[in-house]
View 1 (spheres, rainbow, N blue to C red):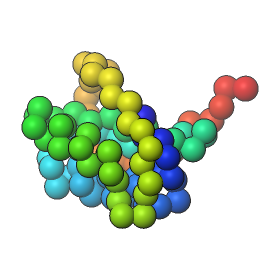
View 2 (tube, rainbow, N blue to C red):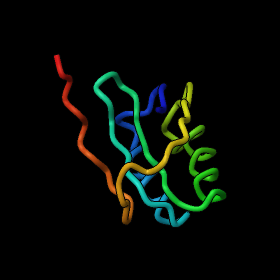
View 3 (spheres, one colour):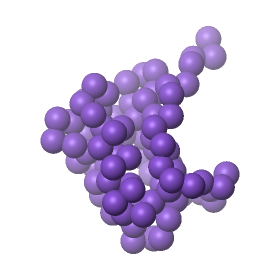
View 4 (cartoon, rainbow, N blue to C red):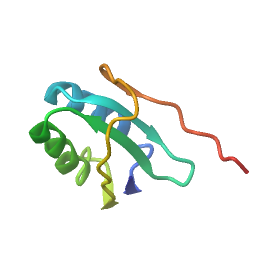
Length: 90
């Protein structure tokens, strides 16, 4: 999860373009609380490059924190997509 000024600054689209350039599959989406969430799947070096990129984001972003959780990909991922914001359960 990426927090700071990360919505409304082309974070998701820039992330998608960077992931495709790195050969990383996965997705990125805005969260209702103002954060961005992403899942990166690919070679170790490529995923590490995406995490490094997320710590800065695009020039218009002001990234304050990045939380990284390693896990097995829960689904077979092909390509990289921008997903819709999940709705609050409340």
